[in-house]
Length: 264
Image 1 (cartoon, rainbow, N blue to C red):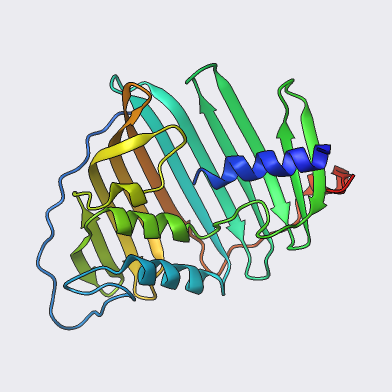
Image 2 (cartoon, rainbow, N blue to C red):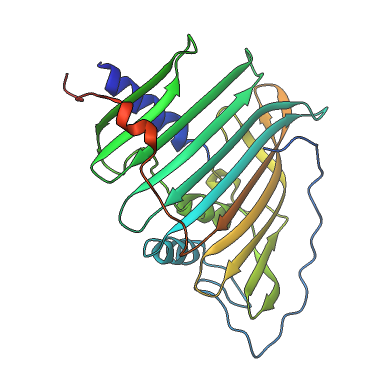
């Protein structure tokens, strides 16, 4: 396997499985409230009676595919004492012309203390990435794009669909800005996209803010789970920012990358 292929595989594996903050928190109790029967409407896939996750997630992705935006995800896994086992922050800057860039940061203490730092950029034809190897030496490489590039789910469509498929969602509030969806009961937890080595999710609380065009502008998901023989709490958050105004410029460091062929 070439160095470029190794970098591509490592980057894809890291980014595909992740979408934290520090203080422990309990899942909030949210009681759905009565919503108005006229005036503001509903986003695609949302009604008084039900939420259709696939329709909502598709509307979210379809709308974002035609514009520029910034998407920020935060995830943390803590033990029963509130100690952070893993914290993951991922910010991506996306343009409608298949150009996007991002910063991925992850640190943890699960086995050994580790920190992962990856910066990436793609114009739809090549991928450029800089990252630290195990010797803490900075690597900067480029390689041709294959499939979707370094991030397979830019808009978090699959994450949103997974939340909707795993949790019983209902409308808690409706206004001219959109709707708030909440849920505190798992219906099919196997559909939830959980962090690596985390299983058996339970005790869930989630709140999503959905615009009328179907874009999910924010969500916060908290649940308890098992990691090996340890009880952990997972907190996942997403924020959509600067829709229509995000700019994606080629980073200066791309000019200093080493070009590699995946067939070398």
